[in-house]
Each structure stands twice: as structure tokens, then as C-alpha cells.
View 1 (cartoon, rainbow, N blue to C red):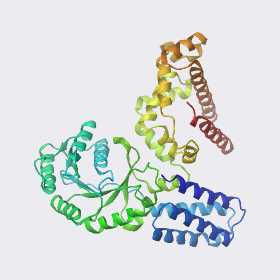
View 2 (view 1 turned 135 degrees about the horizontal axis):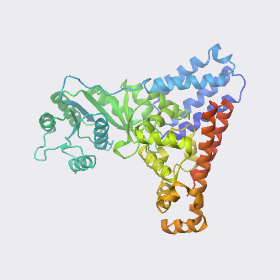
View 3 (view 1 turned 180 degrees about the vertical axis):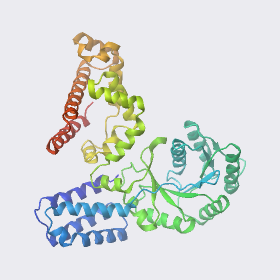
View 4 (view 1 turned 120 degrees about the vertical axis):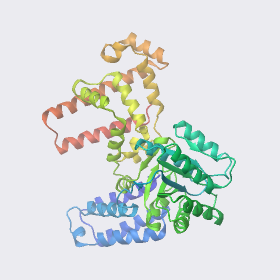
Length: 460
């Protein structure tokens, strides 16, 4: 979503880094470019004005201008201000300890992704050890109840609905009583939305809030809305006094300025973001990590978190074995399964430093189907061939190609990839045994890995 903004900011910082020292004119010119980049990204003009003023004031100090690394200091200042703009620190859900069930109410416009957000939130809470119940309180939108029930069945979470009633307040109260009877400790209320803000929608939301006394009111906003997002969240903030925001469709191709404006305009934190359609795509929002991604620094902590969640104890033992003895084709199968659990190749690439730019060079797409083709070739191997691919000769390669519906050239490419991965394992093993690596060696290895990935992005 932030690719254009990221590119513009990268050009600004690149221009500064080419200068040994910075003058006030250099800072002024850079701030002007940053202001234009943010405005083009559809960030609210008042937010842009304050952001640039704060950055410029800090950059104009003698500490920056007289520094040996002034450009790095400017980047650090912009990063700090961007993090503060987004919220400084993660804002988690606040749940009452002495209440059963806890109630979470979702509000927002129609089309913002409210119903799917409710399901994703239920999935997230279940992973935290909760037992959620979804309440279908949108009695106006055709098939809204059907949609919620279908999505609830997919993740095996119950949905309370009352098709005989057209009173959302009563349905919400009934859902809470049903949760008590079925020992469910969280009720997530999916309320109705409209295409535009209207008085009836606001009054209904206020009435549901008064009747259910929710522990948290979360507003679901479409990250692709742009400047209009500011007006929408401001109105909801005034009428419903929501506690935080779920930002949906963060994987869209809009400019993303609305997402950068929400917290500054309303004072309400972004609590969750959603990238993708899968139930597991809802994640806690970390302002510092998002700021680093916008500035092209990646989100390595996000990769670590996703890997820790995807890996079980057996896989950690496998990783240690691979480090010592190298990996087999069965190990490659397990790694591909883990990649899918982490959200796929595209999501991982977006979290890597420079990953968004590399994706842009590849047209914004990664060939996820390549994983399926590789799996087909590995499944066509015998157990002995998977354990020791070195025994795969020409005849075996032809048999594997025929069995998987691929070509001999593709089988050759897979075996070459396996060999390269084992070479990398060998380098890491020797570095581990020697007690570490120099900063120069680390940089060389990272550069080489990045070049390798660039070469594979468009591969089939």
C-alpha cells in the first residue's frame, strides 16, 4: 500500500546521503519533498503540516548539521516522528477480568470489511485461549447473517442470530445471554453499516453500546478510503467514542494516507491491521514496525514473530539438525508448509528491508504457485531420493519430471536450488563453529542473499 510513499522517501534520503555535510537549504529542500510525498499519499494536510514542522525543527539543530553522519540523523528523526504519528507503541485489547462474557462491539461503514474483521478477531482471540461467540446484528444488509454464519463455520466458531427479529439491540442482548448459557467468554457484535454516515446508523450504534456496555468498541476502517477516512472516524469518535481502530485491506493498492492520519486526527490508536482474506491475517499493530516498513527498513521482528508462531518444537529440532547435517527434500517440503503458515512469500518479502521495492520491480507479484510445482516434483521422488538427492541421475530426473507433470529442466533447477541451500547451510555452520562473523562478512552475505532473491522473484 505504501510503495509510492516509500519510493519517494527513499529518494529524499538517498539525496541527503550523497552529501558529506548538510546545510539549512538541504534540510528545507528535503522537508519540502517529504511534505509533497505525504500529500500525494493522501495524508491529511493538517497532519502533514505538523509532521513536517516537527521534523524540520529537530533537523535544524547544530547536533544534526554538525554531525559526522547528518543524513543518518535525519532518517532517525523522520523515523521517530513517523512512529509517534502512528502511535508510538502497540495498543492491545483491554478485557475486563471480572466480567463474563467480555463484549467487543464493531462499528463502521458498509464495505469497510466489518463482518470479515469480526471473524478474524474471533480467530485471533481463540488463539489467545478465549472462547468467542459472534453476534449477527446487521439485519439490513442482504445476506449479512448468511455471510457471518458461513465464515463462522469455516473457523468453527458459533454465531448467534435471530432472523425473526429486526431489532439489533435485542439481538445483541440475546447473544450475551446465549454466551453465558454456553460458557463463551467473549461476544463480538457485528453491527450494521451504511454506505455513508447517517443519523439512524449512529443512533443504533449508540443504543447497542448503551444496552450491552461493551468492554471495547472498535471501528473497522478501510485503509483504501483516503482523505474521507478522516471525516468518517472523526464522526464515529464523537458519537460512539470508540476505543481503537481495526485497519482492513492494508494489502490494497491505494495510497494509504488515511491510515497515517487516523491516530493524529482522533487520538484513537490503531489496534489491529489486516492484510489478506485469511482468518489468520489479523495482526496486532506495532507503530514502530510499520514506520520502518514505510521508510524501507523492513519488519524483521514481524518475520521472527511469524516464524515463532509457525514453528513447533519438532520443527525447531529439525532446524538444528539441518544446521549440522544439511537439509533433505523432506525438509524443503516442511519449509514450504511453514512459509504458507507465515502468510506466504509476498508477506514475508514485504517485511524484509527493501522487500517492497523488490516486489515493485517484480510487478507487485510473487509466483506463489512455484511452491505447488516444487511440491509436485518432490512428491514424485522416492523416499531414498528425498533423503539423498545426490543419487538422482539423468534417468531418475526424467522419471520425476514425468511423474510431476513438469520438465527435466525444472527438476534440474530444483536440485540446483537444493544444492545452493545446502552450501548456505555449510557457510552458516562454519561461521557458527568459528564463533561468529565480522560486520563486513555479514554485509557481504546479506547483499548476496538480496541479489539471489532479486534473481528468483520472477522465476517460474
